[in-house]
Length: 188
Image (tube, rainbow, N blue to C red; front, side):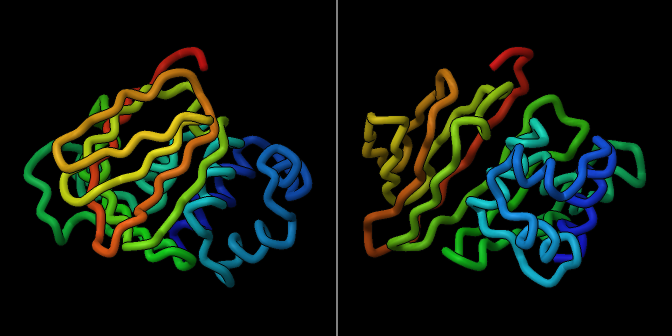
């Protein structure tokens, strides 16, 4: 939690934003941002989505910057073992996210485990300046892309288009595991 707290504070300060400015840009209360920055509260996936959108960073980038990797410190690519990749857990839903690629790789790949019954909404701004593919590895994902709902089974993929409010939901009784492949774009 301390690493995420430091990363959020660093991103805010790097932009010379006050808590009020970040709150206005993200839609997250000043009090919540302050608690997160002091490592008194762990942000939910929804809050991370709002903060990352305000910073114009993907959630994956924000978490990768917070976690750091051995690749960062050694400066060389190589084998990354599962134990080398920190897992982030949403305290509200149990959603778990593990970054697969390091920060120097040109695409971001994350593995997500969405518990039975979990629902994680993201604002449209969280998808600006990025291109994404969602690939369901195990289970079933109910994916809301704006007003359109897609039922995705293991092996199914969906390429995300223009930014829209999106919801990742698991309406089944078993965990859903999927991968998100993200490439940065220059325009929303």
